[in-house]
Amino acid sequence: MRNAARSVSSHVFRVARMGNFSEQLSPEEFVEFESIRILFDCPPGMTLFVEEEMPKTVIFLLAGQVKLSMNSRAGRRVIFDVAYPGETLGLGSAFSGRRYDFTAETASPCKVASLACEDFLGFLKRHPSAYANVADEVCTECARACAKVRKLGLTVGAQAKLAEFLLEQRTLTEKTGCGTRVFCSFTHEEIGESIGVCRETVSRLLSDFKCRDLVESRGSTLVISDRRALEACAE
Amino acid sequence: MRNAARSVSSHVFRVARMGNFSEQLSPEEFVEFESIRILFDCPPGMTLFVEEEMPKTVIFLLAGQVKLSMNSRAGRRVIFDVAYPGETLGLGSAFSGRRYDFTAETASPCKVASLACEDFLGFLKRHPSAYANVADEVCTECARACAKVRKLGLTVGAQAKLAEFLLEQRTLTEKTGCGTRVFCSFTHEEIGESIGVCRETVSRLLSDFKCRDLVESRGSTLVISDRRALEACAE
DNA sequence: CGCGATCTTGAATTGAATCAAAGATCGTGG
DNA sequence: CCACGATCTTTGATTCAATTCAAGATCGCG
Image 1 (cartoon, rainbow over the protein chains, first blue to last red):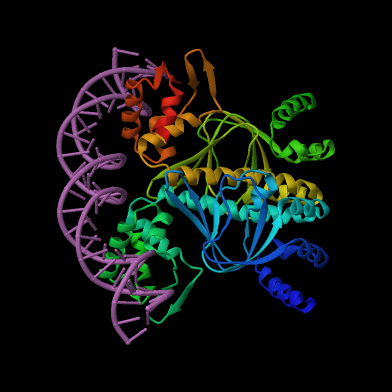
Image 2: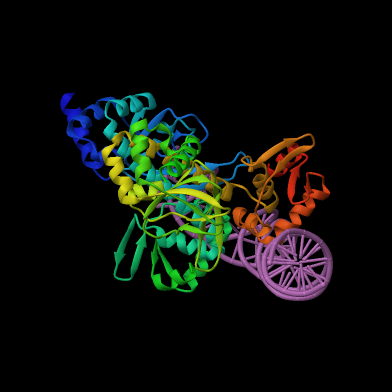
């Protein structure tokens, strides 16, 4: 039992060092931090929290991917971003007591550590030096939101938007002899929701890109074969 | 000289209490804070800082309005928001060392207090309790950015966008017997840049709203005469 | 008064959404 | 291993909202 816990936590620690909230905690703080957070696994498609609700927990993503989106009751959706291991979700909301800004839903099987807001705030009170971490994380979140505003507002034309989207998928790419392989688990619909165009338009543009030899589809993954030209599309 | 300085600073103090960064500082901290910031006045149209540049200063807006925008080299612009007295600008960037997320330009004659980043960071180091204020302010900035993403991404149709824009102008409104008077100093072009539609469309829609008696223009100001109906337009 | 900036309105154009109808792909269970 | 349904993709035809282009009206200021 103890051993199992230790092996989980050492794994967690390893992952958690990847630039997130707990990274800058002192060893003692980290131990306390660890003692109040709850680890669990979730299946894909699980909702971690919902926009406009009052914050209940802070989520530390240890493994897997989480889709961050905004939804209107009219059924429209904007995929705001995808979070990767090491990121903290809902931190700003928990801290400020404001409602969640977006909905977080697992996009793959995930390992997460969850911390109730009150525990989080208590921890902060006991360890005020962690405020700096909070500020740091929130800055990142903010920069991300601003980047999205920029893209949504400044990029005109579906083609430019799609090109930008593809070029931006840095996180899960792999350089090969003949281009950059992009691991994008998104459906066309989701790509559409990320860039604000409809499903069919994504499909059409992608075919178009293929015709023009900017990208090729290798099975289920996409390869950017002419980055230069794709950048030109994005303007 | 001393007297003049004191009278300015007492004025500043009064304004600065309006919910911004310095609000939660202790009196001693506030005195120190005051000693390192530089007060000045600026004419309208003055650029305080430019997006993508490395942060040099943090700006505390004491009086006037500041337009926050994002610009593409293609000449396109998104007006992100307008800042009012009491707000802090560029705080997140100064703190995290990331480039400014947007451009800040005075929209009216302004009084501002400016603080060099290094002084700001030094102050923080000496008074770590102020980290909480930073986190607070950045949360606000972040919530704002998220709200803008939501509007840009989820609101479809120029009409809904404009209606939403008008309804949202809470800051400078005045309720009268026959509706809410909106003090919006924006030109149609600027409204367009705020909501992402072209100048002419704004003009057309506004005429349309007038025909349908949702708004009336009283000289240079606009009066929302049928808020209910306008809300329906915004969906 | 006259000038520059801003606003208004109309007509033509277009880019993307919508509607529609096949295909492709995938996982499941027989 | 194949048949099945479900989900996702492709492609074409049509429609529509909003941009663009163009020309004139109005406003506010020196």
